[in-house]
Amino acid sequence: MTIAAVGQICSTASMSNNLAQCQILVRKAVAAGAKALFLPEASDYIGSSPAETVSLARTTEDSPFVKGLQHEALQAKLPINVGIHEPATGGKRVKNTLIWIDQAGVITQRYQKLHLFDVEIKDGPVLKESKSVEPGSSITPPFPTSLGSIGLMICFDLRFPALSARIRDLGAQIITYPSAFTVPTGKVHWKTLLQARAIETQSYVIAAAQVGPHNGKRVSYGHSMIVDPWGKVVAEAGGVDEWKGEPEICIGEVDLDGLEKVRREMPLHPRRDVIDVVATN
Image 1 (spheres, rainbow, N blue to C red):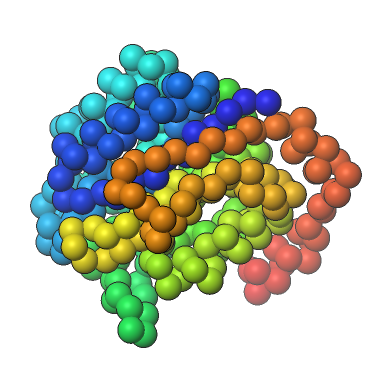
Image 2: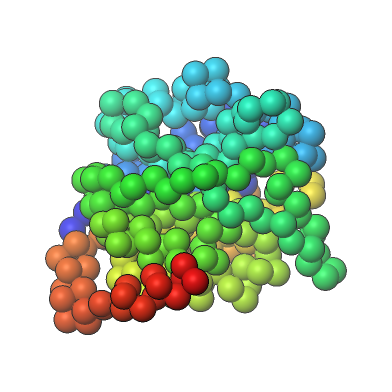
């Protein structure tokens, strides 16, 4: 079994402050003996408006946040999975991206969020991610790591089980959902959805979450989590109500032998001969 560390921060519009929070989590992950650190969606920054979100975007080559984490990964010999923003073509929107930085500090994997969060919550925030974010157009195939084969997804992708099923079909043993869930939806759906995706794909689900108020405006739910292939929560950080204003991690073991045991003893064989035909009609 190997150890995964899941980080939880409260990003603001200050990239330097957000980097400092993540650097603290790198130290904590190393001290815990983790083989990788998973950080939330939009760890580099959360803007106070769509216009600020676009104005702050940097390429990975020019981002002091990304370059800082690449340095940390190299120095600690620790892979880091982190959600960032990148400029989109035309300069009017950004890409919501998840990157994998290997232990040599090199970006080896990149996934652009497919499903955007356009939601109007009664007595809550109105969030129109599509105003400032360009949706992705492809799946990143699962890739091997010291923890297992990892498939990348982001936040709102969690609500689309067909996507996680496809990632499992492609060989994923671990599925990531770095997120910035709102408090109203987090209270009723966050844990349930994570457990559902873990159970139905018989995979580990690793979900690093934003927590607390961002720029004095929207608030994120927290509760970063690792769920095993049987649906058991093996690690969980606190929520916004318990948050003390400091970055934190939770750690959990990834047991690939246990994963294979679940898949062997509860075999799932989707009727693709029927499902795929129906889906195309």
